Length: 130
Image (cartoon, rainbow, N blue to C red; front, side, top):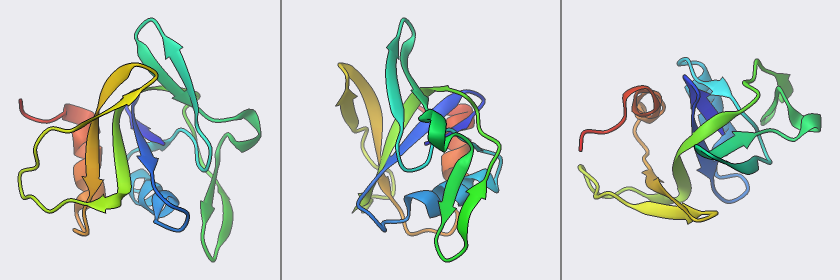
């Protein structure tokens, strides 16, 4: 999970699908790490909060380089979920959602575009036009 201004994106996908790589790309564009590999989801009065298990705070795996230190935010509010296991096939995709602990959150699909990490950072900053 990564966040921008306290709004988190939960990145899910199969092992080796590029979750940490996408997180690193987003971090290079201004996002901050919430958690890599495992994410703690906590229900709060404002929705769902994401954080890292204590042993993994501030650590992210970069394949073929090792475990890297990273500035991490202690927690962030879940804003959307991205699945890397489904490729987006529509230029203007419909609104999709995923229920997590009873909360409906926007569900985004993967995109092979080189600007996808930047678009995700912008999504977290300003949302999507209704």
